[in-house]
Image (cartoon, rainbow, N blue to C red; front, top):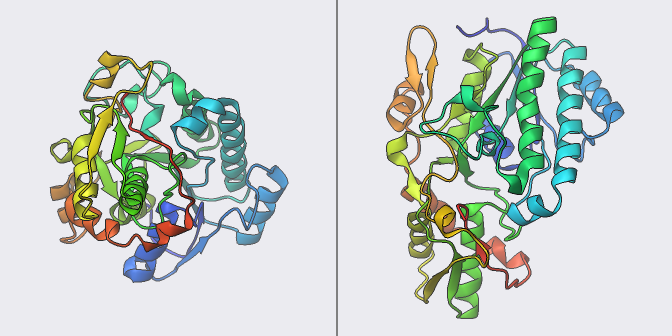
Length: 350
């Protein structure tokens, strides 16, 4: 059961990022309720690694509810190089935000985790109970463990103080306002930028990997609606996976083909194995764990797939990957602000 509706001041950290901007748009387009005041903040408003600045922000806003999206994030190469930085900064951010929320008496906090928190060696299908069953992948263990600790903190705040602090685990998010930097971005924005450069330079598009690993992509505006649903209706401390159904998985090869088609790239496309990579790992189709989950709430049980989103959100289904990707990929003029880099895109699953 969701908590009673009433006057709410909802603070969204990381409000200028991919998911934060999506929530802002969904609220502006009518998802906000009477009595709700939404406050979106970014690093310009406070350095959340600093306890005093975080406390001052929360004392000023006095939120009744918090959606915590702020994090130090980066692509694979940065994670490999700076695991300690990703650990320390994210632990500081998360501890400051959760403790400040507790101090001002926030009734609920919904934090954002990542599928990378799941054990590197696991069985499928996975679910939320498996988060702590083994170490995450070694490439980004600093970030992964820092995100895992949010779940530990949520449980501890509930046990000691009765706080309703929870978290969501979204699958691969894409949409407007993504990070298109080749080294720091994720799969789809990185592909978009690579195709843009290859098309502009008249060169071949070279991507690393076999393309076989499969991913579940969720459109940022769909995820925004789910975040709002969790904020209002989900009352458990246990984290919840937010994803499309397993039947909607897309292989990395299919994602790359969608980008190439949408951007009308007619050049050569080549695939290469990353030097020193493990061929067996490169061919593993389920490299990143993500699965469908079911939320038990009265009067319905929602399983987060396209059909259930239709039911849960009054006829608004999860966005079709190809349609939304096509719309996004055709609005690429802003990519010209990036320097003409020659980096190869490292596909996941290597």
